Image (cartoon, rainbow, N blue to C red):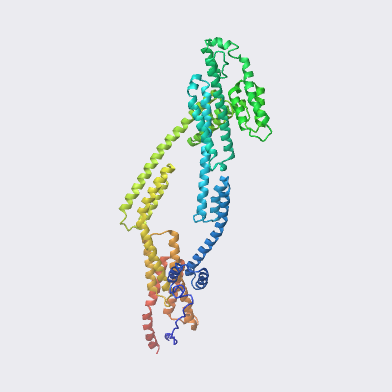
Amino acid sequence: MSEAPEVNPTPAKTPEAHPLDAVTGGAFSAETSGDRAARLRDWLATSPAHDVLQEVFKEMNARDKGAARVVRERLDELRRAKDQDAIAVEWVAKAQALLAQPALNLADAAAWQRDAAKAGAPLSREPLAGFKAQLAERIKAAEDLQHRVQVQKEAAVLLSQRIEVLSTKSWKDAAAVQEALSADVARWQEQAQALTEDAAWPSLDARLAQQLTSSRDQLRVVWDAFVSALAVTQAAADNAEAALPPVPVWADEIRVGRGLPAELAADAPAAKPAKSDAPVKAAAVVLQAAQVLQPLVGTEEDKTAAIAGLRAALRQHGRALDAEVIQQMDALLVQAGDARGWKPQAVDAEREALIAKAKGLVDRPEGQTLGGRKVQETLRQLREQWKLLDQGAVPNHGLWKQFDEACNTAYKLVEGWLDKLRTESAQHKASRTTLIEELRAWGQSVKDSKDWKGMARSLRQFSERWREGGHVGEKLYAELQQQWRQAINEAEAPLQQAQKDSLQRRQAMIEEAQALGAAPALQIAAIKALQQRWQAEAQEVPVDRRQEQKLWDAFRKPLDEAFSRKPAERGERGSRAVNLESLSAHDRAVLEASQQLEAANAEGDAQKIRAALTALEEALRAAPAAEAAQPAAAAWQR
């Protein structure tokens, strides 16, 4: 018996409109999920209230979780903004506390931005952006002041060295440059005073401030000693009865000017002290400076000037002192708070160790040669250490000559490394520039091409060649990187546009699949045509693998659900039948073909799906023949 079509005697009722449908612009009455999401986006552009957002999300989430995701993202965004506002209040208070301090702690100020970013504070928005700029300005001012202080300290050392060098030349040369030196010393004092009056001075490191003060006091002591010695020398040159100056070179020059032979002047006890008297005279000068420092030991008074004066006397007369006096001066300096003390023998031992390290940069076992950069950094550190030793003790010119020769020999390794680095950098620059030009030419040649897969493959190859282009300097790399970005964007613009159009077409096919899946009757031919269009689109335009997988899952989901519903519906309709044996041959064939299609669809294999669809269509086309055979069989039986 043929089954009569089911007739619904009652007409379908028009569903009632949702109360929030008017508020959301018809989002609840939209037919597809894509339309609901689009209308919700338009509604969110009007900035609705938070309580309305929550109510709409609750209702929409029960109906369509995909469309409700749009509202949930807005709620999450509002919650993050609220949390960031709360965090911003905390970090604004910390920034205000830092800025309110007269002496800014650079470490805390630098850590403020890092810690605020870790905490999730919105540093790009006001008021944090303003506080960030203020702290950066204060840090920059303090760092600039530190640099200027260090430069000023080095300038004081150079001035002191200029003054000391004059003691080895004619006193007339010293008198000739006295006025220029006086102007330089006065200018240095003015610049040092200006540094102490800088607004960022309270934020300066206490160690640097103390070093600047020590440099100022030491320069003043050296300059006063120079002026005093030069005045004594001029008086001795004008008056033959006047005392000789304390500078040996100038004193010998005055003796020669008085008509005494140099040999006689060296032997005359009145003109020059005997060699055995040199330690006594030197000790007298040093002890005189020590008497100024001794009363200050153990007190809270400023000892910087007294320490600088004693160290200046030791630098000038330290080589003539015996071991006992040197030990006493070392103990006095340590008691006064100068941790360096005065250990000339230990300093020379440290200098010899630096010389050995400099020579060891070249004389290394085979296979343990240091790289050029390592040698360069080591030489810089060795020279800085030597400079610190010269500031704390009497210079040793003999050891300095050995050290300088060893450093110059080791620097030849650095020069070779720099030459090699410049050559390689030039080669890498040329290869990268050629690659950019090649990319631009390729982009012009394929701008009208439709071989999207070939374009994507070529672009990946260009990117790999750029990554393997070799090392260049940071500044040069930034310049080349900008040119590369511009060239690669121009070259891949057609592919990006094709991918954008392909994504739109695939999204439209997903909506078609959703519509076919929601249809009451399963349209096999339409589904097959839609799947063939999807496969053709995927073969023609490549997209990111993860994104393509997500789109494919969204495309096949409604179709899978539609095919999974058919066996259940067929089972309901066939609930009147006892088993498969009671079905006709045609129905069994159609049922078996649909089950094979369901299994192929679950596997996700396009070839099996197409074969199963073909088998199902053949089973359906066999229906007229089966129906024509039934009357003939009935007549034969009669």
